[in-house]
Amino acid sequence: MKQVLAKFQSLPTFRPFAAGIAGIGSFVAAGTSFAAGIADGATASIAEAQSSGETVGAAVVACVAALCVVGVIIALVRKV
Image 1: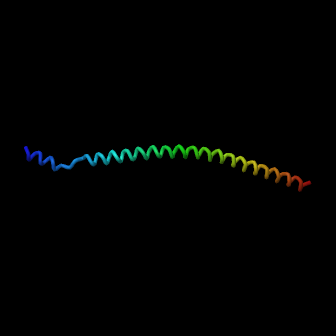
Image 2 (image 1 turned 180 degrees about the horizontal axis):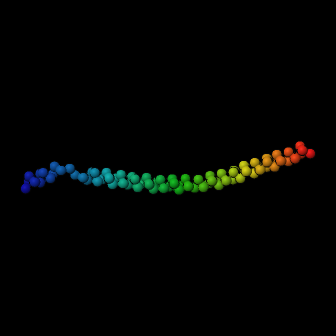
Image 3 (image 1 turned 90 degrees about the vertical axis):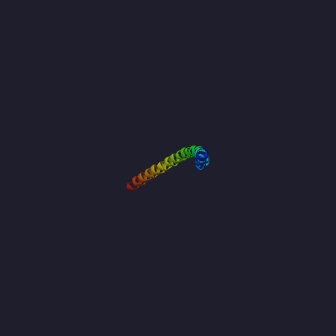
């Protein structure tokens, strides 16, 4: 009987391995929640940048339209 028990005592234990897996799992879970916070912040920043870009785009379109009108007026004045 002692020989059988001695044989099983030489087998490696999996407790450190299981603790390591649990540690890695908690690290991944913490990283995932941190990434979700970053994603929320990035989404808000992108929405703000989009509205700012639309405002600048409208100003550029208005400028180009104004320059076209000025060009047409100058062309009409030159013909007269």
